[in-house]
Image (cartoon, rainbow, N blue to C red; front, top):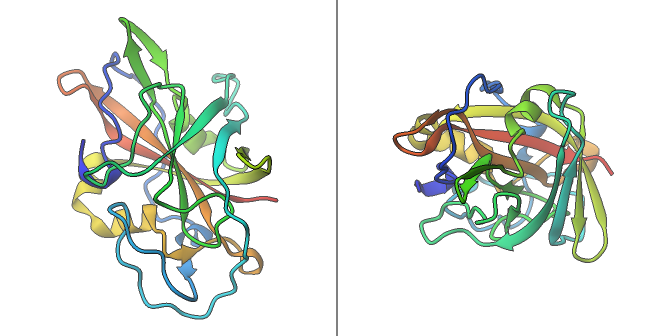
Length: 236
């Protein structure tokens, strides 16, 4: 597994053909964010050291621990949608993002921003698929590339351990090769940044990121070539 959460998991599934891919251009301004006022969150292996702070209006919210995630189906060709349990886990010892053993489960990166935080990136990770007892099992994020292409504007619902329900609206999807991500520290900073505030000026706060593998599958290495990133902003 590569550092900085780039190679998210080593899969053992059959070759993926004709899989949709998302764009790889610049993120919308609301997702690039603005430097946050006040002390910055200490950087982790998935982030870069923050830039200087400037004045910015930040919405103060009570952070919480996610326990489930739900997304409506991205299209009629993929009618299942996402309905998954969320566990909490810190980064791996090498600084990469933890991927749960159960492909149907999602992991929240508890070393990074929590849902409801006033800044940073709330990161959820899971498998695209996995082989269990010789059978390919669809992962919780099996359709993430489909969402990244065709589900802009759809709602993501997070249920928290304290009973609250937070809703997000999908804003953008991006897909990059793992080679791109490994060789471009600035790109990784933009994708995982924990030091900025996001959204419209009247309600700046944290953003939500769902990330998994995607792109062509290499049966020799047992890995997918790309990572898919799905971004959302609070809608309630």
